[in-house]
Image: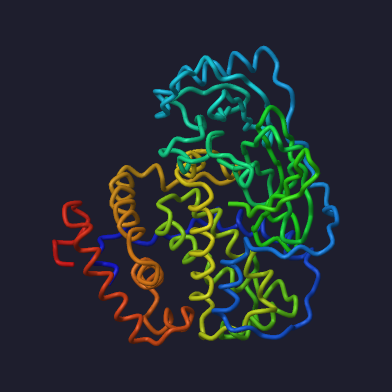
Length: 250
Length: 197
């Protein structure tokens, strides 16, 4: 039947790739606590639970047991970063992003994700933007591993993530992320001025604090860093009036 | 790569049971048997080999974590693995939106290069696949899931019925309706083989 669709044929998987994939998996397998054989669930139920993983019920909170989930997220950008940020914004048309007033964007945070990739995050009154750097450089539109993501851009996000869409009942919104299994991953979001603290919780109730500055929050964590990680996430927001609200991660 | 088990049991269900007891070698055998299929399936769901690599890894990580909770209803683990892959792909698409297009250009693995993406003919194959994926995304949810498993994943109607928890004739009906819709959606794209879809 699939032939009707003229789909590309299956490829033989390169042994090197297979081996690398297994080598990344294997340490996590050996570290896993052995489970007792529990109540068998129907396959459909198990898969359904996975699909609904974003809906969590919180038990008493504890910090993550591994340092991997507590990686510092943000740093103060310097003058060189500001130049890179401006160059990135100037190249927005070449990157396929429409920016109405790029000069109004102010650089707020710098985030490193591993040795090669980093991000410069800024905002103006209406939108937030993330510049992707490769080896600390704005690689430009004609080299790989560069990019620019902004809120409210239907080509890159969902088109309703900017500050205008935040409200008392929706004080934060994640708008972009870069995730890698077992390695540092980053979620970027915007927040109203009423937000005092943002924390991200994993399915094992492990907590990773977000860096919150100038209406932008960034969480850096490791997907798959916990034995109970089913890749669902939830944000807990503490408002300046002390009230606490939970929001599902996207 | 996991070493092949000299006394490897014949069926996935037996390996699955051993893995549920913490037998890494048994799980490695399941990995050996199915990783290439999951990797290709993930590509067909996403149109990106880089994303497919991540989804394949996540699929097997999820399998290891759930192997003690899930009982296979098929002789093969592949239908269950495909369902997990599809769920993970949907989660990624929901979360990342078009941002995923940027991520696919970011380096994922410093060890392994995606050799196949250098093949010249791949551009056209990717274009065709993306057209199909765009059309599949417009299908009603129930039909989309059947299409993902049967047309994109190559599972039989029976295998899909088992993991979807519905009767096999229902899968056939969904596929039939989906084919009609896809024919319409893909009419002018040049994707359909010989126009006989």
